[in-house]
Image 1 (cartoon, one colour):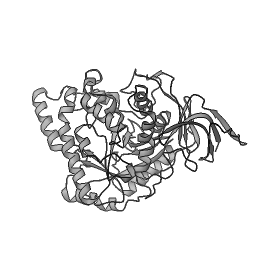
Image 2 (cartoon, one colour):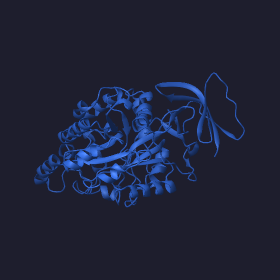
Image 3 (cartoon, one colour):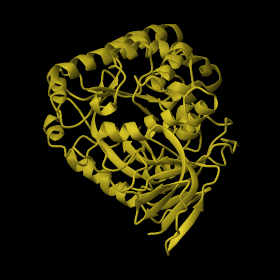
Image 4 (cartoon, helix red, strand yellow):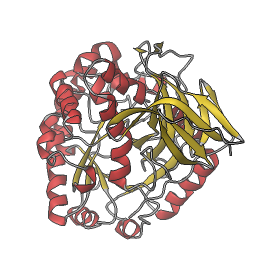
Length: 448
């Protein structure tokens, strides 16, 4: 393993930006010096000059769909982790709706085995809940499993959990966070039926946020919050999309002290319903992208700490799949390669300080899931690090998109900040466009 001295960086960590130098040895952050002290270069150590650049902890994305096993024509653990490290993401947490669905400990262990062989980033996997697998969920290892995923009121295959007894059993499990996709299926079906009667199968996509409405989100989210408070469970509400749901959240405070935590995705902060006219089904996600007022409320909630985590819900589909009438076009889009540069655009626009972005994309997921020695720039921590040039504009185009599906809903967008280096466990996996595929990531461990 190579050792590195990162010199002359602006280190952004724990609410501060301070100039300094950092030594990586044997995969660990061994020492951090303030800029006034001159570091020495140990034998066998490579020098990385970060003058004019920012040094951040590696991004931790707590919600992705890398499509392996079973859906690898869309993406796989190698291709999507390659895109991740190119965007500064050093750890991802993958969802269970693959083929087969990850609803047993045996299938979860098989995913870990595949990731050890293929993933360039560190990894963890959710165990999916069904109406019939409570014993599997109760037996999950909290030291190796990031959480339990519940599709509550929104069906994915046979993973809709709508049996009251099953839900009660899941919410009695307190050793793991319960990550919930909350949309009320009954309301959605009623809305869909209304628009199908008017338009048939080819419903204009701009009606998506009216079909998967704010009311459907709130009804399901509020029920999840009620169950979590009843059983004193750690509920993690993923991909919030409405201003209405913000009323369900706890007061701002340290994420490690909260019972009800929340996540917002980059696309719900970047797009609003006016973008359907140009982007069409490329920005069809579940939950739907909603109004400009919702988007603005979500941005404010990030800034004032009501929302805890920023993630992607990275969910690639092929362009052929997306190029279908509304009712047949799948929901989801790729985002992980571009999440950090897009969020840094909010900083350049004066909307969210870069220190807050680091908090929501690095520190908060580490604290929320109790990840062992990641998510911060601290001596003794794993050297998961990202160097960013904050002022090197570039444009997203087909030649620099690394997703297996080959496209992005952000194509032709020019961004100010560029990721130049990504270190995973001290290994320089991404260096100015060159990706070293020889060293793989590690399974994340949790302090629970």
